[in-house]
Length: 349
Image (cartoon, rainbow, N blue to C red; front, top):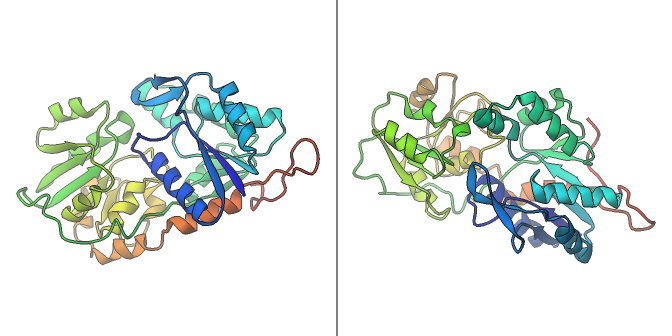
């Protein structure tokens, strides 16, 4: 099957969307599919407001359309709702070509946190964007329930995976000279990640933050008892996970949180709020603690046996997740002019 994946998020960005797409493409190709990512690379871009490290394609419609026509995909998957995604959606609708979409990011919550845009406005736009999709792929049951309650239809769960070879337990001396325990946070330092909820806690030991973003300087100035290490390459992260005592996930807006699986695969228990993402990834598994009192969750997670999060992470493989995505793609019927659904594993919901 020839699969076109259109995305606004791509390298050199370091985030969960990019990591998910890279691993999914790798696995789909290993399964024998011909997969082509259509990204802003090679087209004029402008920095995304508030996220200057994210380049957004400027009016990519004609350029993207020509590339999609040349590739002639059997299945079209639109991964993001930015300019590339909008252009791909317009391309498909003009040709009556079925396509699938995905919800990777809670943009309404992000916009609400940044500019106080009402959630109802943000979700109204998202409903309109995803309405023609043959399948809206979501990462967890909790996110699916929320979207159904907000009027989304034709949703299906497409989970995530983790490289349990790279992310695995082992020795680490990266924090050898710091007071223990080590409370570790990994992710983008921006307002929607809720880092203040973690950094304001009174905890023994040392709080360590890995990541960069627009809030870094303000957070460093305010929380001088925490150690900010900046961004780290994906290959380096296992050493930091292995050297920590608890992984603290303070976001209430992530749809999944790949870093949760990475930390757990290294034997690191999780402390988080009981919200979508942690509810489905950790839940009542014993691999960590979820509590509206994040400090209480941290202290309980410290007592978790490291074997439990590792065992739970082992259940999430990228091969299985990629096979699931392949099963949800909709193949165009080329037997007549226009397009129709030839195969879909999704039942309307």
